[in-house]
Amino acid sequence: MGEITNFRGEVQPSQPHSPEQVLILRVADRVRRARERKGIPRRVLSERSGVSPRYLAQLEAGEGNISIALLHRVAQALDHRIEWLMTEEDPWESDSLRVAEMFRTAPTVIREQVLDILSPLPVAELRAHRICLVGLRGAGKSSLGSRVGARLGVPFIELNREIEEIAGMPVTEVLALYGQEGYRKLETQAVSRVISTHEHLILAVAGGIVAEPETYNMLLARFHTIWLRADPNEHMSRVRAQGDTRPMAGNPEAMDQLKSILSSRESLYARAEARLDTTGRSVAESTDELTALIRTRGFIS
Image 1 (cartoon, rainbow, N blue to C red):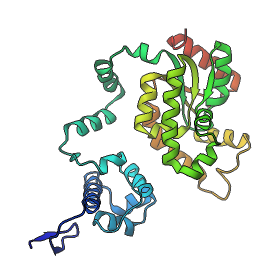
Image 2 (image 1 turned 180 degrees about the vertical axis):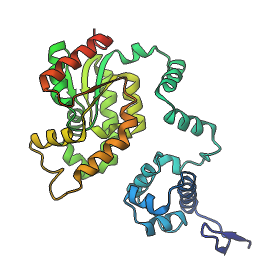
Image 3 (image 1 turned 135 degrees about the horizontal axis):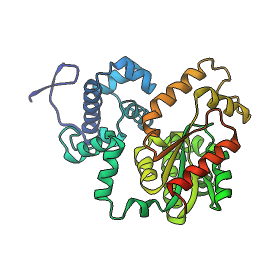
Image 4 (image 1 turned 90 degrees about the vertical axis):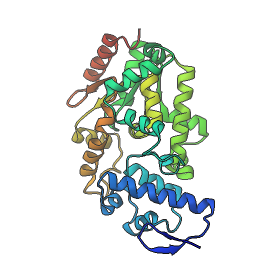
């Protein structure tokens, strides 16, 4: 029997691996290489993912068995999809995975050119007269979306209501029963259903949807997306004005966390086709400005 060297540099006798062990070792290698390529110390990856340094060390060594939920958090912290860590294709050698990564990180104008080439239908026809409002909670998606929809004579839909209809339960119960992973799957299903049933509408989505590449790319391709933005203080004050004190309850660092979320998602929100800053604007003023933007850009005829 020969010898092999594990990921910690220790020489051990080689022995056949089960399919499960092969997968664990593959994930260990992918996580370690991705972290090293990005120049991220294990301590920093731990802070970003919420997974302990000791658990990350075991993961990278191919020891133990990490849960799907924790692996998903590690993948997000490394800015990769979870399947990227498990696929049999080497992500650094595979042309398809490399092209997908290049597309994901390319400037908006390049992505649009690629989509124009690959899309079987013109972008305008794919998007029809569907509008999607993206942005962090408190930007005005629901309040402005409903008012502008009524003014333009088109339906206004909140994606969470569609998710509840598909699931047959409130979003809070969906999250409690199925977690974020289950919620995100229902979110994708709900977007697909809206596309298949509406050509004229205004849709408001949850702020975190932009962190799900597959779903967000679907929105960008099939909707005229508008980023509603505001400064952090206004985001926080609006949420509290809605009667939700959770962001501040027992959390003196809530504002710092909010600013961090805005900063981390800014490049994603910026992929939207248009943007509107609602800082310092009344609901009436922002309604007028959003209506004018939609009419000027010809998003709804």
